[in-house]
Amino acid sequence: MQEPRTKIPILTIAGSDCSGGAGVQADIKTFSAHNLFAMSVIICVVAENTKRVISAYDIPSSVVDEQFLSVFEDIVPKAVKIGMLPSKELMACVAKNLSLYKPENIVLDPVMFAKNGFALMDIKNCEFFKETMLKFADILTPNIPEAQYLSGFEIKDEKDMIRAAKDLVKLGAKAVLLKGGHKKDNANDVLYDGKDVFILESDRINTKNTHGTGCTLSSAIASNLAKGKKLYEAVKEAKDYVYNAILNSLDLGQGHGPTDHFYFLKD
Image 1 (cartoon, rainbow, N blue to C red):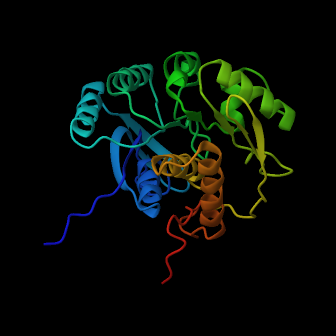
Image 2 (cartoon, rainbow, N blue to C red):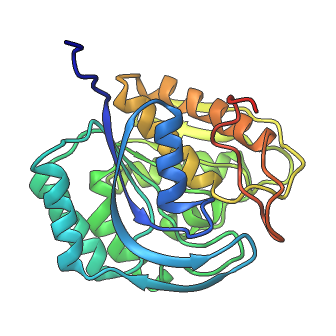
């Protein structure tokens, strides 16, 4: 009799994207591309496509509680990626469940805006987010606009990125990957692990098809942490994965097309 197979389980806590390029759908694709068993806690149902966000419906906190219970009473994940947290109520709900179940390897992506600028988290909730969520982050993965709101100052160059990353660790995150994709000169990221600063260099790819890259990167980091990789290695390999996913991005839709999470599979 053949022995049953097992896979490393991993969890995403995030909003959905019905067009499949970002959010929970991107997370699940990324987990699957890393040969992991993907699970989800849906926080918000978002009606969006490559051009725009039409609407967002928050899931009642009681249903979020039940999703947490369903996951953690049965299949405990080896890592957790947290994305869109649109309201104080849902931030408090997720924080309560993280305190209760104490998962390991938490990657917190502070999703504030969709690619078209639609606010996925009210900026008025920034302080509450910092107070309730940063302490759970084994690594926080903001882009430059998000880091500016969280740190409270304008980020103009790499020196400012390093300063912001260190400030966010002081506020509670154990490590910070500050993504440089919004810079004009290059796409270099800053990784601060609470002790050392690393500059992770990246070439800029000339494409508009970058829908869901932030979700994909944070999920790839979580995937590598679930496999037992050290932080620097987990981040470096995740960046390489996303680079190739963008390099092989899909020309779908009329706006910012999605990346190819399974670029390594040939037709």
